[in-house]
Image (cartoon, rainbow, N blue to C red; front, top):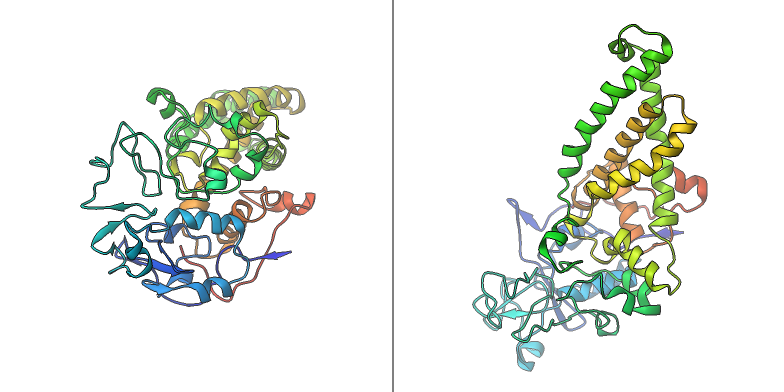
Length: 396
C-alpha cells in the first residue's frame, strides 16, 4: 500500500522560512482560518508544499493532495483561529498573517489582545505556560479545548495527565492516536515532572562516557584474558573487539524493532493499568509528537532496561560486556536518529527516507513501520510501509 501523509509538494522551490525566522503562514480552509506559522517546519509534507499559501484559500491544494489522514485533519484543528466575535469569524481576513480585526491571533485559535488574555502575563498563569497550541488557562483555571471535543473533553490539559489516563476507558486507543500540538504535563510536582523531560544532548553526554568506560575497563580486559594477551590495550588491535561491538549493535536493531512493536505498541484492550503504562512508555509520544523534550529516552529508565537485558547477554555471548557496549552504541545511534527525524532536515538518502517513513507511522499507519534507524526488520516481519513516490524533494 502506498501512502502520502499530508501533502504532495506542488512547488519545486520556495520556503516559509526566511533568515531563520518563520514567515507568516495563515491559510483559509472550509471558511475557517488557520495560523500554520509555527507548524510549517513540522509539516510531514514539507515546508515547500505550503509555499505561496499565506492569506490564501488552501482547499484546492489540500484536497488535491492524496492521503491526508484523519490524524492530520485532527491535528490541523489545533491551529484554527477563533475570532472574538461573529463578524470577525465570517467577514474578516488576517492582515499579514498575524492579526484579525486588529486583535493578535495565536497559532492555536485563541485571540490575545495586546498579547494578554485573562490575566496571562509573560506567558504564565498559575504556573501553566501557554504553548502556542490552544492551551490557555482562564481565570477559573479551565482550559479551552480547540480540538474535536468528542475526544479532548476526555481529559483536562491543565492537570497532570498520568492520573487521568485510566478514566478514558475504551476510547483510549483512539484518543492517543489523535495528535495535538500542546505542552504535556505528566505529574504535578515540578521536580518529578522535570525528570520525565530529556533534552536530546543529555543522552550522548551520559552514554558516550559510559560506553567508553565499559569498553576500556571491562570489554578490552575480558577479551585480553580470553585471548591470552599480556596487555588489555592490545585488544584494540584485534578484529575480535570490533566484531563484538558490531554484533551488539546489530542485536540492538532487532531489540529496537521488538520493543517498539510488541511493548511500546501493546494493545491495552481496555485495561486501565495497561493504558497508563502504555501512555507513560510511548503513548505520550504519539499524542504530542512535536514535544522536543519527549523524543529521547530518559537516562534512569534506560539504565534499568540495560541492567535487565544484560542478564541474557551475559549467558549467550562470549564477551558480554563488549556485546553490551555495542548494543548501547546501537541504542545511542537510534535515539539520535529518532530526534533528528522529528526536528532535522535531511535532504536525501537514508535519513530522508526514514523521516518520511517515521512520520507515516505517526500519522497514518500506527500498526506498521516500527523501525526507526532502519526499516530492515519491517521488511522481514511484513510491517513495512510502502511510501508514495514524490515528484519533488520535501524540505523541512
